[in-house]
Image (cartoon, rainbow, N blue to C red; front, side, top):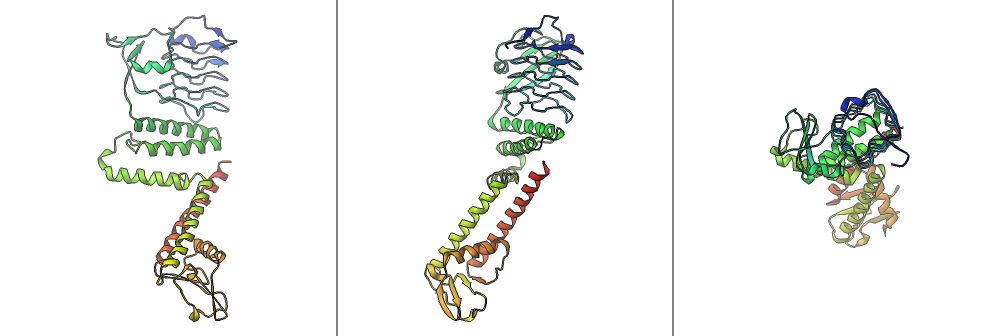
Length: 361
């Protein structure tokens, strides 16, 4: 990186503890298990480095660059990540806590390794495992997952991932980021992470429990039903987190109800809606078999009901199962009740979502 100075000290995991670095280039290096705890690393370049199991506890990493760095099992508790860059970095499995300062840090555009990484600590070498010396230059970090390798006492093995497992990993990362943003009182980002935590958990088909880490394939009908319900919740309400999506769903529901009302009153003589304005005589209402089935009874005369009255009926039915001035009969009775129940649920979600939006501030 332009303006950075290459590190010229000893390459050993403990050589960086409690030291002060400014504008140092640590990029494209194998730094597995490096101990940067209690160090100051301002404007340093860690891009394209392997920082698996590195320790940045209580480190000041102000404006440092971790682009495409591997952060598997890296400890960043109580670290200062202000303005740090994690663009396309591999942060699955890292170990932060809520007190980590992430003000203006670029965290949301992370990447995932194409194969699942597992780590063990062992001092024994294996002829079947590639050996990398600590501090050596490495190739592209995205290619490290192609073969098993070992750096010092840390050995990493890899297995294939399917699409659902990748989705679960993304969900877990967003869960971690959510708590970090909450700890830093960044409400907008925390809500964003909460949404995508649900979004990717849905696409994992709940294959694994996000809390216990165990498979839940045994109860496939329940899992399938829960996944289907989660997709519905995403489309209808954005998991109760997107007010505009809920308003869109209310608009669609209202439109469908209006169309159903007109259609039923068009084709059926036994189902429909009667409208009785204030002061009208309900006994004189007549139901016809055309689109003018919705009848306006006023002063004992029968007239056709205009679309504005149909919309009025749809709006009132949203908030009450028995709108004053209207009498539904036949098929319209259960339809209006279902419409009212769905509208009520969406309004409850809308108010809850707005409350959450206000609370995050």
